[in-house]
Amino acid sequence: MSKTRLSIQNVLLPDTEPQSAYWDLYYQGAEIVCEPLEKGSRLLLGHYKDYNFCSYFNAISTEKWKRYTRLEKLYLCLDMEGDFEIAVEGYHLVAESAQRKTYARKRFKNTERKTVEMEIPLDNEEILFGFSIKTYSDCKLYGGTYDAEIEESAVRDVKIAISTTTFKKEDYIRANVEMIKKELIADEKIGSHWFLHVVDNGRTLERTEIEGKQVYYHPNKNVGGSGGFARGMIEVLDQETPATHILLMDDDVLVFAESLKRTYYLLSMMKEEYYQHVISGAMLQMEEMDLFWEDAAYIAEGINRSVKVPRKMKRISDLLINENLNTEIHLGYAAWWYCCIPIETVKKSGLPLPVFVRGDDIEYGVRNKIETITMNGISLWHMGFATKYSFFSNCYQAFRNLLILNACNNCGIADDIVAHFEDRIVIEIHRFNYNAVKLILDAWSDYMKGPKFLEVEQCEKILKEKSSYNAKMKDLKEFDVQVNLADVYRVDDTNYIQRAFYRLTKNGQRFWPGRWMDDKAAVISFDEFYNPQRETFHRNLLAVDIYSQTGEMRSLDKKKYKVLMARYKKIKKRYQNNRNKIEAEYRKEQPYLVSREFWNKYLEIEKYQ
Image 1: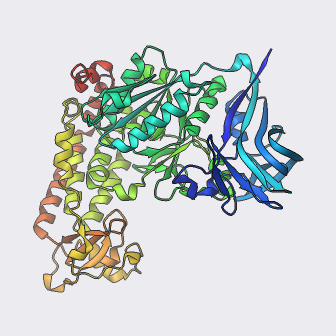
Image 2: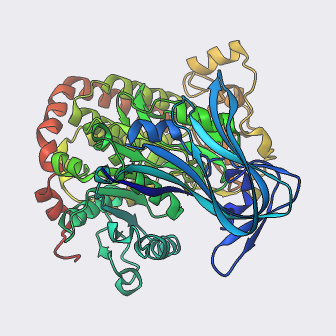
Image 3: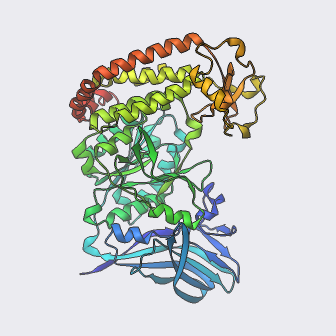
């Protein structure tokens, strides 16, 4: 049997802005000069120094490559000039501390630029391998690769179609399309294995600026992420060259071609038992580019949760912890900012539910009982959610869509979902956040209208109506209130007697004399951070967004309180009396709601070709 070698990972240099400012994603230690060249770049390494390249982008997750693929041998190849020593180093965890073991050292004296090679041993239990360079002269590093040796017959013919849905994010989408054209589709080795479908919900782009070889543009109705990704799946299923996988990706992201290439090689070498798994790319925060946010999630206690906690990706111990955590978990899913799904899953299971935004990816993962593969370095950058908080998304969409998810898939978690949002009602009513409570009740009521409510396309109507209840934020300078931004998320010590009256009276909204309320506005957070002592018996609450330095004044209104509480009791009673019937209706209708027949009609595809 003949062997072949594949360059499954490139050694990345910090030559791309703004990512280059976070050089510890590429190597450990102080910043090194990265010199641009006519083609590529190089790092200028000073003499008599030690440089460690075990990092988020330049370490290799050997434990995962061995587990998931048919990898037989692995080599480190570096393109360098100078007098230097390379150490091949493995890393594992003891408790939560990184332990390093050197497996090989070799000195090279390259009087001119040359590629050197060292084998990485695989008969060990190391989680990661990296390399360090000790210099005996001024040296230059031009990059390198990790090369895998594999049986030629074991290499799969993988074809990946990227589907990205955009709505008036022209600058992001243009940049990503250009990158994919230049760095993927133009690649001599793997370019023919990539396709790109841009679904434009806002219809603000021109076909001529998007389309090209293996790149397609699809104007679409504004039917949210679920409608955009459904259209993308349809187009991928119908493309002339059959795809083996569809990679769903958000529009407002920064992504390296390297992440996409690693995904391709991982699939090309995949063992049969993992080939139907989903590859979930990590979200790193755009505002803080070395901060890992999430790469796999699940439903628990009525809400979605990340499998992993946010971590700084500059510490080797955090890299190891991230790779060591199990992502195959009950009611798990992968977010659609970067999610590579086998096309057989789409053919078997159908398209997303028409839920507009927030939860289409969750439902799809739960429906298919997906098992996820994650890996350091397969990732992108996305704006953090703290700057995107809205009542429409976090109160209306989240509650309604989780109930629909549970009903369609018979998950048995309705009680947890309802309990979570009933708790939110209690919290928000104490914070005089009447609009948020209204949207939670609207979500509950709309869910009980059953699946027929979803079948009628009214995405923009619902978006406009419900978004009108989002917080009306104004510049903090417009309020006659002293605000210390550093104090907004500080938890106040609890006075238990006050807390008891706070709960009993619903913060002065029940049988509590108005003259006993403090007229001075208390400063609270505008999102879901809860600090009851701060707001107790204040007539006015200034809800502050520390990121935009804006706020919304919320004031006690006993009339609104009574109306909302009466509505809450009525809706809850109706839900308790009808929940089994409603859930059965959703389960019965789900096959139609995820079918081509439904989506062709819902999207009016012929109109928007």
